[in-house]
Amino acid sequence: MVVDDQAGNVAMFIDTNANGVRDAGEDTLALIGQTQADVDDFNTAAVTGYGSQLVDLASEQVTIHYNDLPTGAWVPDLTGFDGNDRIEIDRDAMVSGISGNDTASLSLQNRVTMSSQTQFNGSLSGVSSGSTAVFLSGSNLKFGHRTISATFPTSGGTVLHNNYLATGTLEGVIASNAGAIANNFQQVVFVTSAI
Image 1 (tube, rainbow, N blue to C red):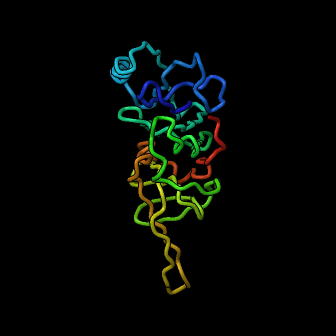
Image 2 (spheres, rainbow, N blue to C red):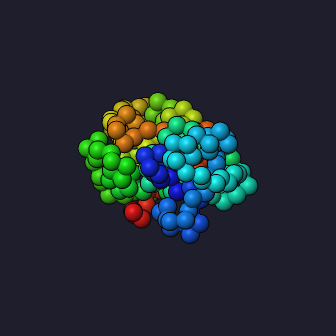
């Protein structure tokens, strides 16, 4: 699946050739927690008649490729996300303004594979030395940035704490019910832009 813009409306589409780009003819909406009413609303807003396909994370191997922030009802529900699923974040596409967004809120650093985990104030992240981050905040998976990195003394040495926010123009919730990510964070990666 690819999260992409269609006439100013961001939704999830079945990426039939799995190239991370919504190509011509890839017009089937992927439903992960959405309803037929959401499809009807999207079709009205986009002035078209897209079809839809239910996606079951618990029984299917799924890759969700983000080129843009999903909006409204199109934030996927990750209930059932497990070891055979994957999330790809195309950071260049996310911050390039492909939907006319301003790129000033995020600075680009080298891409990192998010395999380590840091816990702070209920958030998990696996980003190292860059301002762009994907992290858990409660049950939501968010795309945002690191705001604080500090070392605190403990009885056994020191502990590094990081704090993350998703408050910028190009930042926000990218998935709900994402608690399973805590056990599968190695399956959330930044990828080279396909756009």
